[in-house]
Length: 65
Image: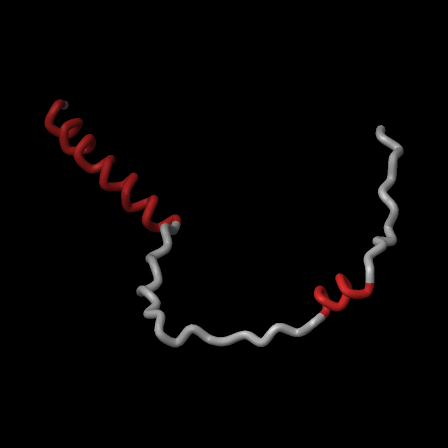
């Protein structure tokens, strides 16, 4: 296992620290129209797909007997 450890204290000048800690004013984008939320693919949807695949095979098996 590698034993080299990075120092936990980061050295930076005061101007860089000031840039990182200053508060930034944020604005809201009010002119953007949000699209309708997408429907989620759930377990029920998967069950319906699998069930739809099974029904035609059941019909053909019924008539094949």
